[in-house]
Image (tube, rainbow, N blue to C red; front, side, top):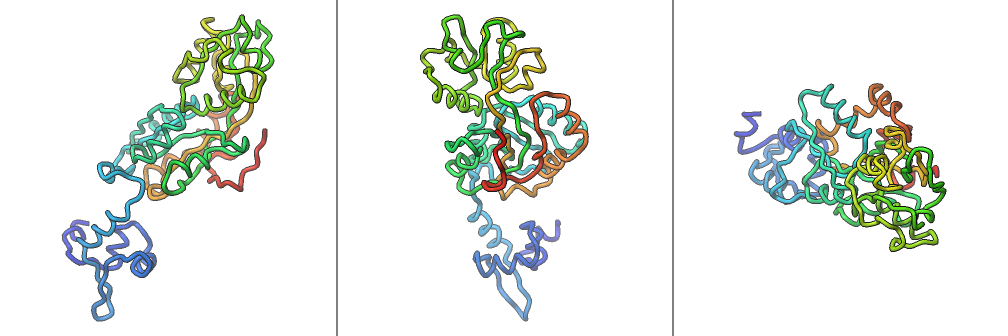
Length: 312
């Protein structure tokens, strides 16, 4: 690579190595995308300086201050939704891969997409219910990103309402949360769980103004569970996994799809591929089997708007 870096003119093979594409793709880039090149005695040569300028001009979705961010440098940045199984997978990744460190930022699903748009993370983690009440994440990504990312399923999760052991107040529906003897803890704005909860309230016979504690926000599913377990609140929206971990009762609302979003330009980077490949390992399946409320039958598969049938 040192000799390549010092060359003023690159061969077709060297440009393919620089751009990390197949050699045949180079000819398409010359004809269709204006990749700078000259042909001398039947051989293509590429001025390195002009190739680098062309590459800078064709970068999408990344601010200039983040254009060098790569998961191949030993650091994988993930932002988005909180999930107990996902945290376990990060720990598993660290135990199996010593060449990459994963950093996760709990910003909620919308925060994950925003960070992906700004080039601040390599993977966004999201579970945002669309207006059609069927699909997840696709419409939100289309609105926020200049180009559709790659969607890879992590799991399907059971969402609902956490309740004290034995459900002492006999809660059977969202409408019961508006009773005078009830108070809740809520999830933060921008989280997929808050979006789902607001949707369920909107289609019920109550309003958010009738729910005591609606403005009492916590940042993680586990925090919501601890609020219920301690007796400080009577209910909280969260996933079934937390109910199983803390011995709480649970009122099911629906199963949802929980996806990993990756910008297409980054998808084949080594760090990202190593993380996604872990989802196919038996160690991951064992972790998922230890927690309640997960279905990993779609895990590791690429998702498209027309290849998923809602299973509610």
